[in-house]
Structures are given as C-alpha cells and as structure tokens.
Length: 164
Image (cartoon, rainbow, N blue to C red; front, side, top):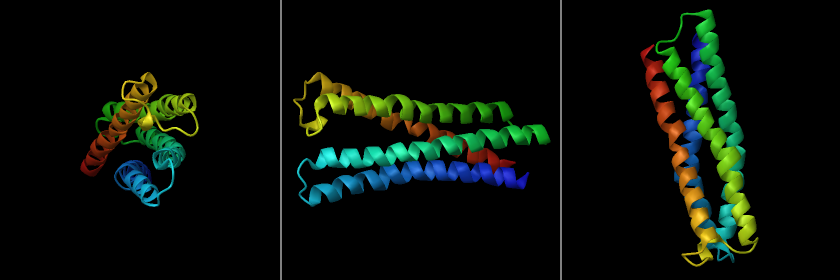
C-alpha cells in the first residue's frame, strides 16, 4: 500500500509542481527573455514557445491523472479502502477532466485563433475591439483558470493522504 500511496503523491506533486513552475516561472521567463533580446514579434514567439511547452506538459498531466486514478482504484480493491474514496476519486476525475479540457479544447482553440489571425501577428497587436483578440483573451483566461482545478484538487488530495 505504501508504494501505491507514494505513486499517487508523486503524481500529484509532479502535476501541481509542473503547473506552478510553468505559470510562475517558465511563462514569465520566456516572455521576458525573448522581449529583452529585441526579437521582432516577441509576444508571438513567446506565445508559440510557451504554447508548445504547455502542449507537452499536458501529456505529463494526463499521465499523472491516470496514475492517480489507478492507484486509488487498486487501493480500494486490495484494501483497506482509502478514506473518502468516492470524494477522492471524484476529485481526481475532475482534475483529469480539467486537464483534458485544457489540452483538447482550449489549447487547440487558441491555436486555431492564432492561425486565423496569421502566423506573423500576435493577438495583442490587434485592435482592442477586434473579435479575434477578444476571443483569444477569453480562451487564454479560461485556460489559466482551468489550471487551478488540478492545483486546488491536488492540494486537497495530498492533505487527505497525509491523514491516512
């Protein structure tokens, strides 16, 4: 059982840690460094780089979600059943659903808008009332908010694991 609990906590730590590192460190660093280098269309290049990093991280998140759900199910089958199993399983499912939504709906939507805008124009350079810029802003904001679901859920799950 200890190995299963360890695998679950490690998956949560990688998932949450990755999201926090991407949002708090990688994204600002990418945008700052590329802008400081005087690269033309710095926001466009930064967005493309971070978009690819995030696309790759979604694969990590899916794996972490699968490990988390699998360890919960195996622990339930082998016993003893984890406390608050249904709540934990539901929370882990919601976390994975949020990651899947971000990776399969929001990120492709953002990429689609960027293609509509053009390969050499960033959304932020469009007029403030441009429908594409507004749609891009909505999708980007929703994407950032959806990432809080696994962070908050993961913290709750770690708290419960510590109490078992």
